[in-house]
Amino acid sequence: MQSETKARVDQLTSPAGHPVTALRFEGDIASTSKEAVLGSYQSLPKATAKLVLLDFTKVDYINSSGIALVIQMLIEAANSGQKVYAFGLSPHFTKVFTMVGITKYAGLFPSQADALAAL
Image (cartoon, rainbow, N blue to C red; front, side, top):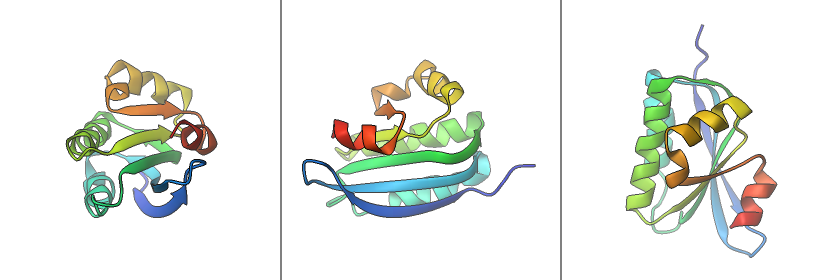
């Protein structure tokens, strides 16, 4: 059974002192996750959310529809001039994200610390 997707927004600071917005997802990401994924992203103030981290550490599963939602979000971010990094993916989903070309739009990192250090 699919678990509900939850999202929350946190404000962080990069090691260089830049403001960073973290979108933290939890549960499964599928076609029913549109509001949690796209809604939470689209609610970010584009003028101030220039650096965005996507936290997948508490995501259990992402199906093909969920991957499509993530890609749609990343395309919107690229069109808005935002820099996006993702972390916390399992090795399997890191491979899948790489295979489908997500790395054109977002850097993939094993941890939040690694992603923040790259900013």
